Structure formats: structure tokens, C-alpha cells
Image (cartoon, rainbow, N blue to C red; front, side, top):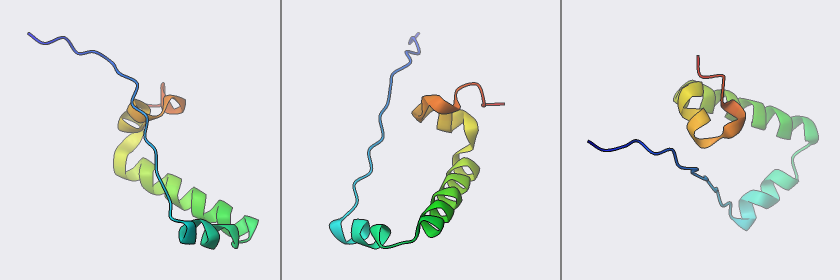
Length: 63
């Protein structure tokens, strides 16, 4: 029987210079909207239980 060991998994996303330049030229309001939409999409796609596996800030929100 295999023991289930919890591991800290770190996810790193790299962006191209062009993508960073595009983001840099967005207004603060547009950046915030983009971030909120991306966050909502990730929460809907993964759910809090899986998101907590990758991001400790979501621990305790798995229900």
C-alpha cells in the first residue's frame, strides 16, 4: 500500500517579452479586470479543492 505524501508544488508561468509589454501598456482598470476574469476562470475550471493543492491561499476553501 502506497502512502499519500503531501508535496509542495510550485507553478511558474513564463511570459514572453511581447506579452509583458502588452500587459504593461494596459490601464490599471483593464489589468484588474483581466486578473479578476482569469481568477474566476481558474476557480471555475479547477475548483477550490484542486486550487488549494497548488496555492496555499485557498486551503480551507475546499468545501
